[in-house]
Image (cartoon, rainbow over all chains, first blue to last red):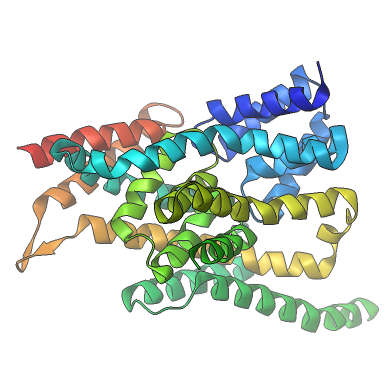
Length: 191
Length: 186
């Protein structure tokens, strides 16, 4: 089979059958691309997961772009990424046309009042899981707590400060601390 | 120019969404509320829908917001914008700059950025639970949201004590829908 077509269909299948996004998808991508198709090795899969964690954007998209590029260059990267997005794009587009009508039905509106509560629990759970994986050192803890407090205040007082500003500030502070500490560390090692 | 606004708004989300789907939610909330595209209520509903349909959550949210604001062109532009940064970054990293992520300065920036993201997600979750669980109407606290919050929280986190991994997010959403129908229907 044509490799581009194969890339497209494989990622469309992954896009169609993984619910919940993120890490659920990584397992399926590894199973399909590393074991069945042997497009990449397990080591490469590990690497791409690490890179995906240090770069923004959906992890599944990062994986699709990487595998596509490895197999067929730029065209492969494009085709694999489009394949990954297309199924959910069609599904969500269809839902967006009907959701307002659905919500006008009383019992569905009631259902969504319950669902609303579940979403808060899921977001909290995601944060707690990330927190458990985070290094329990003073520096990351301080960054995390400051961001948490700042975000709480922003929410309580409805200030229009974007969380992007918080992230840029944190990145900058961390860089400054690193640059200031570096010469000191070298001196220490010299003695 | 709504298409341009959608493009810029979701490009920002795509550029800064570290930490996967849940990292994108505070950013999308920022963008969507500041442009006035959706209210908090609809956004929360859509997060649940995105979680219950296949595909990456932030792509689903972009498609929905784009479609609700400007039909097919809007959904295409928003989806493209949210994916574009990670597409380009991965191409650059794999093709040209393998060493860039190992650079000590880049590492230093990421060391500050990632814990900050976790703090932001944590605060978003806490605020959402408080806002949805403690509802005050006519100077009386509503009981039903509070009871639903405690019940669903107990089921979700309690199920981990019984079964490894507990119940899945989709099952929690189904249970919460059923609980909502029962609690508000009677």
